[in-house]
Length: 225
Image (cartoon, rainbow, N blue to C red):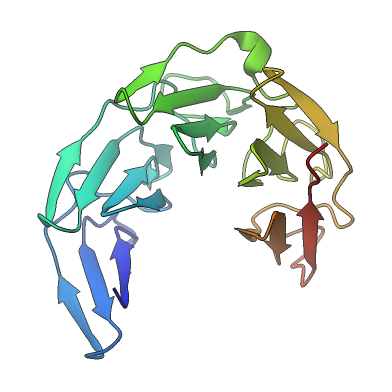
C-alpha cells in the first residue's frame, strides 16, 4: 500500500523509543501511529498480511523478550507470549506456519558473563503459542549476529560471532522433514553484522564486519535436494 513502517529505535539520548510511524510514499509524509507497548531498539519485524510482528530487541545493553503485533487495519497493538529464552543478537525467521527464534547472546544481570547460544524457539502462528523444542533441533554451532532466511522449505543461517576468536564462516540449514540441522558450504567471506534478504531461493549477505568493515555481497542458493 505504498507505506514504509518504522518501529522503536534509539535516540540521541541513547534511550530506547516506542515510536511507530509510517512513511506514505504517495503523499511524501511521515504519520505517527499508536506507540509500541515496549520501548526498544535492534528489534526484528516481520510483515504477514495486515500484521507486523515485532520481536526481541534491546533496552540499554540488555535484551528484551517482548513479542508484540501491530494490526495495520485496526491500527492497534496486541501482546503475544514472550520469547521463552531472552537473548541479544538472535535472528528470527518466518515460515508458512511458524516463526523461528535462533541463537543469540545470553547476557544480563543474572549471568556472570555473556554466552553464545544454540537455542531455537519456535512460535506456532496458527495456534498462537510457543512450541516445545527438543535440544536435537538446536543449532549445530553457537552463534549470534548472523544472517538467516527461509529457502526452499529450509531455515538457513550463516556467519556471525561465536566462541572462536574470529567471525564464523560456517552455514547450516534446518530441514523440517528430517528434523535436524545440516551443514552447508561456508561463506566465502566470513563476517557478522550483515544485512540480508532472501530473494529467488537465495540468501544474500551484504556488507558486515570481518577483520574490518566488509563490502562483500554474496549469495547462498539452495536446490530442492
